[in-house]
Amino acid sequence: MQFTQEHEMFRQLVRRFVQDEINPHADEWEEAGIFPAHDLFKRMGDLGLLGLTYPEAYGGQGLDFSYTVVFCEELGRADCSGVPMGITVHTDMCTPALAHFGSDDLKQQFLAPSIRGDYVGCIGVTEPDAGSDVAAIRTRAVSDGDDWIINGRKLYITNGTQADWVCLLARTSDEGGYRGMSLIIVPTKTPGFSVSRKLRKLGNHSSDTAELMLDDVRVPKANTIGPEGMGFILQMQQFQRERLVGAITSYAGMEKTVRDTIAYTQQRSTFGQPLIDNQVIHFRLCELLTEIEALKSLCYRAADQYIAGDDVTRLASMAKLKAGRLAREVADTCLQYYGGMGYMEETRISRAFRDSRLLSIGGGADEVMLGIIAKYEGILPGKKKARPATTQPAPAIEPAIEPAIEPATEPATAPVAASPRTDDAHEARAGAPA
Ligand SMILES: Cc1cc2nc3c(=O)[nH]c(=O)nc-3n(C[C@H](O)[C@H](O)[C@H](O)COP(=O)(O)OP(=O)(O)OC[C@H]3O[C@@H](n4cnc5c(N)ncnc54)[C@H](O)[C@@H]3O)c2cc1C
Image (tube, rainbow, N blue to C red):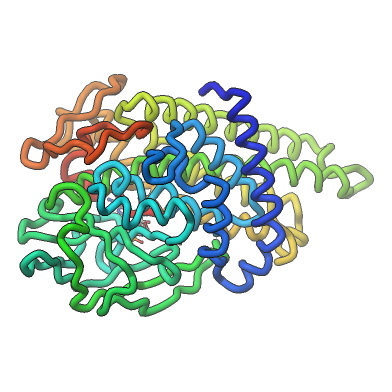
């Protein structure tokens, strides 16, 4: 990953935005259990921050994913994780499939206003009985002339109380398992759509999380992203970007946590010396910084692969796994060095500790990442044909579900392979988004 002067200028822009527009409000939004997404996104849209890699024809910047890396690194330095999560759900988790496989009309209707910051988007995959096992979803869209009639429930949906539209995964045929699903854009003002609950959470308080109900919701079939029946494949592909973005956003926050802890332990003394002078502490903090650097390098390698248009599933899964585990380790270790102060609500480390727990669950749990990695290594029981451990190309797609699809328009900057290459029944358990 090579950063240029342009990247550096862009970094300063995002850094200032975080300092001026997010951090001063972080405490208030954490307390409120929500941040004002429409207001914040509009200001981001005005700065061109919401469609970095999307085509200029829809208001995007037409840049490559290296700018997303910078964007996420700077968002990760915010004083809370909830707001960066809400932002990245909008920019990189509910929009990639739409941007790359949606029709021109669908993109004009939903992508362009989302890039401008007029609309807030969310991603609806998880259900009460289907999280890790995405193939178990029950939300059903039944054909009625040119429309879908949709019934079902979606759970733990980030931005769910504020979103103008949902990128919804639903069953559109009677084929079981991972076959017969489609990704459908559902405007939240459609009759029959409702937010049944705003959920209270352990952490990420500034981000709203909702349960959504769909009761005979009628939307045009033209709202389907890509070909009907390809929703599972498209969502699995969308997950790769989500996982990479989740990992990148996390390490900048981890580094900030360690550096804040260094500053705290330098000024706090016990037994006549600063805490940091205890070898067990300065060694441990240096170990953590080393791990963070290793994660960063892994993310940069994965990002390079993504930019090259290669299958990034293996490295994105490794990055997500490592990020989830390291985030917990960093937050727990650093909180310990704050002592009682670390347990106090007024200290940022207590928020980081709560927020850190999500990454090993959302966007695909650690165990789901391990299953995918094992599959790619050819050591998942029953999946030994996959391929040797060190090779990079994606495993073969099961012929029955290989998508014969191309992006609706050539994604000028999109590093997504034209033919999504996520496969098989194990990926059917490939976790839902953050
Ligand atoms: C704050 C928050 C925000 C979220 N935002 C969204 C969103 O915007 N959109 C959306 O669609 N979803 C969202 N999710 C859902 C999230 O992606 C799921 O919670 C996640 O995929 C796990 O699914 P689950 O909760 O149903 O856990 P389950 O599938 O019930 O799994 C429970 C646990 O079992 C273990 N496990 C599962 N499968 C295996 C296995 N095969 N082998 C071994 N162990 C296993 C894992 O440890 C896992 O954590 C969000 C969740 C949270 C908490």
